[in-house]
Length: 252
Picture 1 (cartoon, rainbow, N blue to C red):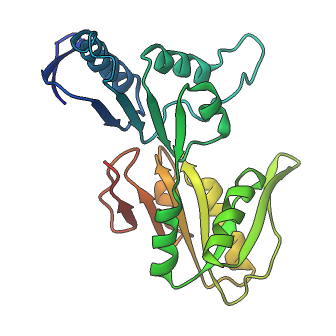
Picture 2 (picture 1 turned 45 degrees about the vertical axis):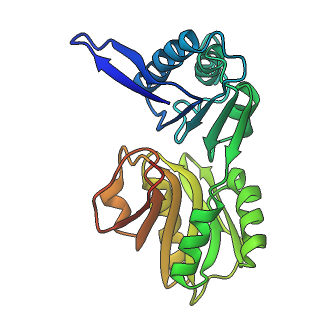
């Protein structure tokens, strides 16, 4: 299946199917523009395939927008992930695959959805670095990182961030003295949390600290991160990064 997208001066997009067949879309999905673009493609495809009941439409989202807004944080505030999921559901894809979603809530809200594991990218990083100690950055990431550590037969050190009198304090539950460490997480909006964790690990004797995140946004704190992290590994699910400090695995 092939299609063309036309963008108007006011930002409107329109889609035209140029070659028939099953629909297999892959997008970053990190903007509302992306979602409206695939909606236009799906609507055109539906019209073209209305009489073909066996035609299949699948969607791959590499960095789901709003995935951290997986609950209503405050009274009278919008549940943004639910809004986004409802929009995706309205397109009625036969399957929606999501790369390393932030929480299971995304899969629960989006119909016919499945997770694409990030394991292969962590494994590549692990082997390149020569079997470092894995570090889970917080309690929320522990279960997933523990599962990866078991598959890789790697040592795992849990950590957690707590606030004492309003100031963040990092607790590390394991021995990292003389060892290289790899922090594993799903998403980096900024870099400060990882910077503090790296500083704590090195203060306890870690020789080097590396970072793997699937979705590397780095909307702030990127330059600060370089002060403590030795290198970053990530996919290009959110954006392409041209910096020697970063190694990216191409997914789009």
